[in-house]
Image (cartoon, rainbow, N blue to C red; front, top):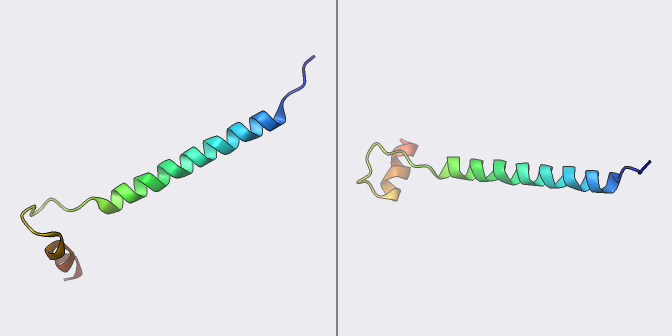
Length: 53
């Protein structure tokens, strides 16, 4: 009977965790970069001022 290669399984799990973590980080960055489309004629500076008000 063959032995189980635990190092391979562990590495596979680690890669899956890393991939999931990177996807989550990307989603958060994309979510933060979405600007409101209420008034697309405004400059980015004007949008930031509206957020503060």
